[in-house]
Image 1: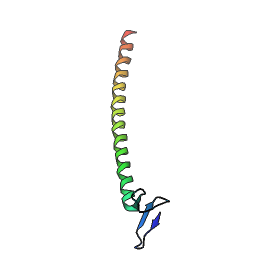
Image 2: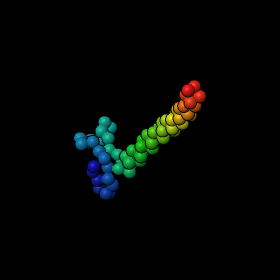
Image 3: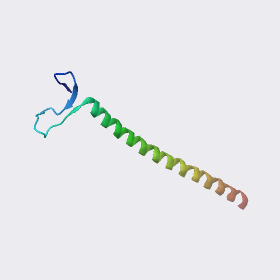
Image 4: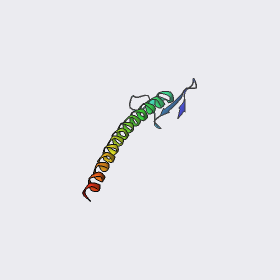
Length: 74
């Protein structure tokens, strides 16, 4: 991390040169990028969780039906 002459904080490459090959991001922008990525990952996790919950409810119903079949066959 570094600070410019105006006091603005930056994340920068250790060997930063203003040659277009090295990066320097304002901390605020870097945090926004990270937050956007975390939100995308959280949405994907939520989506997978919903699918798993649905599958579990299907399996519970199937188990209930199988129990009934076993009960009647005895």
